[in-house]
Length: 225
Image (tube, rainbow, N blue to C red; front, top):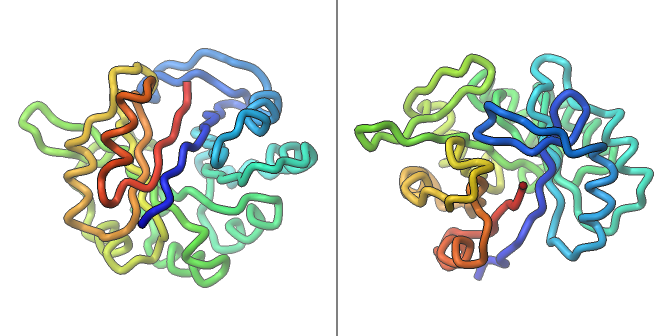
């Protein structure tokens, strides 16, 4: 049986922790290290730091260095700017136990395999920001371009062949609004993988969380705002 986890999430943009709404509007919250230090005391099963604007800058190693200096007792997961196997190694050396991959899944699936060889499949989490179109179709959002398209065959193959250890399903429209998670997004991913699934976006109460964790593949939820 999967261990069910409650993961605290800090979204970082332009070096600051932000309250994010659908990845389209942001309100500043303060220094990421201040939030992370508080979360470390509050008993979460893990802390996930998502630097959403890194693009081609690579991972924010300076931020990770500051977080490492806090002496955290809570496992740390990092996502943002990861594009090479060497960057994956550097982030693990900086103190992150797990890595969230997004753009690289579409851009270069072979690099994902190289990352798995470098740091271990167990350290990799595939992030899938999804939206549901008016016709009910579930679409994969590419944050760099803003485009949406059906889940690419290459991405389907990566998760089907278990080149990552978990899949993070993101409700990109519900993120930040507290209306609950769109379970149709999980249902769209489940046929492609037997991997554990994490859910992020729109979660603001225990009543919204329980149905997600009760699912067979439901391994955990990420709580942000």
